[in-house]
Image (cartoon, rainbow, N blue to C red; front, side, top):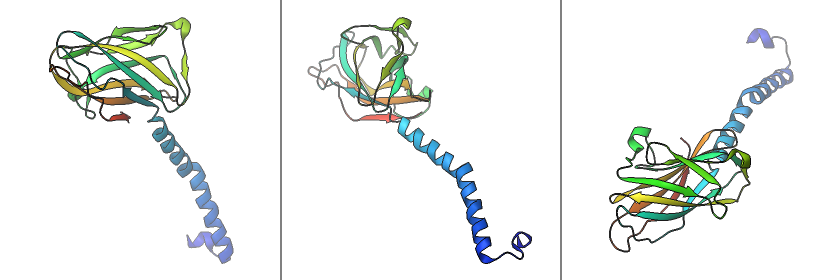
Length: 198
């Protein structure tokens, strides 16, 4: 770059370099950092909490599970999915749980019970509100209380998974460990909760 700085004073050279670096920062680095920070922020939009710490689970019987979705960022929710998965991470095939093992029969949003649902074919439910009451907007720190009716056909442990969409329309997941056993006074274990992006 001798041709570029030939005859220029050291101060002019330094100023030219600073201007070049500022342009590179404004055009490339700054937007990239902001986008990365926003993705990290929105990845924590949902948190899934299970309120039932101890429940007796008899195989083939309907069981009620009270859960709460906590919103850590403002978001519009038109629909979401609830299902059981085997592992927290991994591809879809490794996470899939057969409805012959455990399945969600219904999801309700008391006290108004305006939520509707349809089966997703994988033991879970795709949940949504009727068009005349959409959209459902939640602010940060608000909560959505849900009553999940499940049927466990055999002892099982894994995760209850919530899938929603953040403010940018990207899929976000919140998962909570869950253990189902046929022993008397068994625990539907409300262990560690987590939020992940997939």
